[in-house]
Image 1 (tube, helix red, strand yellow):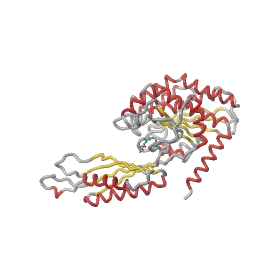
Image 2: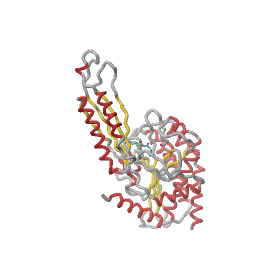
Image 3: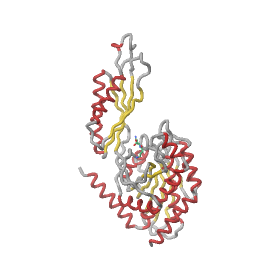
Image 4: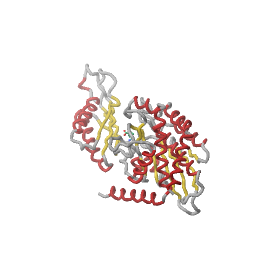
Length: 406
Ligand SMILES: NCCCC(=O)N[C@@H](CCCN)C(=O)O
């Protein structure tokens, strides 16, 4: 049995290696054409074309969202009437404003596609499987802004999946990093314009409100728990020194270790925004983001298997580190899964121009495809033994119960 599983894992690796040029072409096409959240039309079309050209995939473009897609293969194996084990791989492909693929989501898309291709090839190489198996690739837009996975969860797109996999590029390999829950808000101050020299007393200064809000938050921050974060930018700050700004806009991200604390951090931040409005006489409007992201619910069974497979491929794993937030967090509360991080051959930091360069460099290819192999090998572990899937699901149920306790 163990030898058979090893042979299948070998098949995963060979198939991904054989497909490396077209997989590189996929990641490259997305990297060269960065698109913002919910606008990833080129990436969507590129991925849809890719899976349409591959044999055996049923592809659904514009799946529930304009720039989402689903590609499915199977079911294969098993006997009639058996329930299907449906393994999901997720592809992200949105970029950041101004700096392109500075978070390497082009590589996430490539990695998800590669893992799915590798797993399919291994499954095809074997005639008899004890269970019915299906492979699903979900193209999930808008991770950087909005949360396409949360939209898709609300549409029921994850309901028939048993386990989900994706991986995110960063400076090291890690089976897990503590992604934070996040809530966002757009803050708009409305004041009154006036000539800033001739009759300033007629004005109501919306920039003063924005600056006070920024300072209030900065003061508040020193009383935060170490695992809370808040950060913002002034998106509009006025147009000319001699016009008292009648409109300003800020955007803030509020993060906590658990989504249960988001209402607490939000209430504190709201007080800061309202205080600035009251002090300056401005009106304030708070527009909260449509989807909160949850922290990632861990599945150690999957993490351990992934680490074992990664190590067999030569990966070295870090045991600590920091992260931002991800809408995979919400997925992990609905379906067991993992969201490991992978090194791409560069020490550059995510969300910098240097990282954009690193995620488009040829050097990143080896690491991305190695990660895809480890994901597909882990999927094989789950498929190959019903006990492993039972353990994964049991751990998920227990984590949910713990998490739901008051
Ligand atoms: N953990 C993956 C990092 C990806 C990332 O940077 N995501 C953004 C999400 C912002 C959602 N509005 C982040 O700032 O954490």
